[in-house]
Image (tube, rainbow, N blue to C red; front, side, top):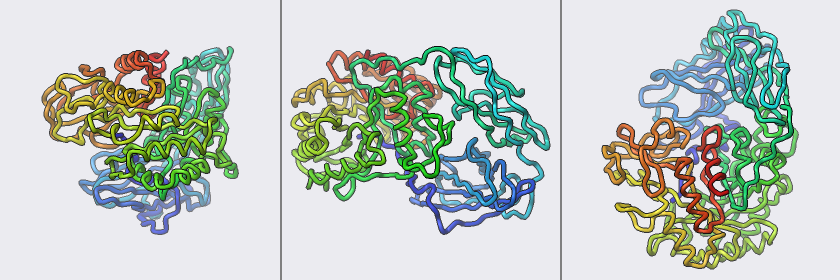
Length: 607
């Protein structure tokens, strides 16, 4: 089993046109007018995807927008993108991001959300006025402050100053943005930013907030390079340190390629798997073209510090990865196809492996982004076994597909595979010829996580990524050591095996027993999916209270979680080195802290 939170709704549709917008209203701000319209763009029964569109219908610029509405009891927003959405009871408020608040006359902006329940919004307000544009709010947002100027630049700090913004009710404070992210809020018009890296480029801008808590447009940006010699990324050693970057993470999770830079993770990894390309009709396909190739990034949001233009041939994640590789030449990027959701497409691919391999190479080597990718990863999670669906391709199918990929891509490309870690007798490792396929592959990402979780809602509670067996483990062979041992026994060289680490936890609720093995009543609440939560949340919301089989667990209230910490990752990396493994990989970057502490633990542990 492998965790794939794909945020149920099809995010690729986010910015596509929709013909059936349901107009709830049309507002105004100061000397301009605007409309806010709503559409339910997808409905999957237990939940839905909604989209609001704000359009400036006036003749002067709209400097900021706030959309408010009421949902009936039982309907709520579960995640949102391109707006900051909060609630008070059944009343919901969406405020513009720093980069999409200003709308020129005739311009529009959309933001979306995933929701639960079946209700529709009512009582819409835009900037405090009626959404149908019949009333004009009396309070305008503040103007943009002046572009900051930089002085007193040192190896680790810079002083910024700017001219004040104006507002009809008065400016309360200013947000200071470094590389598009807020680093401070100040009441004056200057700020000294410290703790910087020497010889490094930064981009700064500021944004004003008035006494009504309205934010105005972001100022122009100033680029600053700290003094001293550039700090080159530290050597990563001879082990593979690979992280998954999810294509859909740029939406609800708001995680972008630049986060690899600001977190420091880019300097501590060797490879990135870009997840996921689709496998359909026996062929590799680009999945979400908007996120991959078209999403535009501003200067503050981009790795290079240069804004995308409307007419450049490649934007989106692929262009950001290109910029990342220019900044960190040691990083190799692989395009990963399949995953839990798309593994069902491999059965048809296995019927004609050569045609499948040819289609994959055509996607990877598309001339618009051929320089971005250094290889291909096949994430076929249940060959000749059952997962989301059941596959009956036979034990030789995986080996045949691997052989065809190597023949098509040749020796200069990396060809890898993410595979099951079911080490039980007669389990999924026994269902396919992983030993025979290994000769064609550079390594296996052995998915040594998701062994146990609230998919068994009654428990017993158990660590989802145990390194070894332990007394009371619910299933024999469901641990990392058993999986690695079985793959070695099948002839896979240890150097071609990477140990898997989850940057998330799995948890139950209704648990009274602190130690593993307790009964439960269901999955614990999670930000994106019940029973699953990012490490960056769990480390504070439910700190570890013990360890079992090399993995941390935590009992807080009635919830019980298991997850890896920097300390348990250190232990697992030591074990991986003792076994002669080729390195480690993790799922996935956005679960880590803002300073990349789990990626740091992997890097340190494998040196």
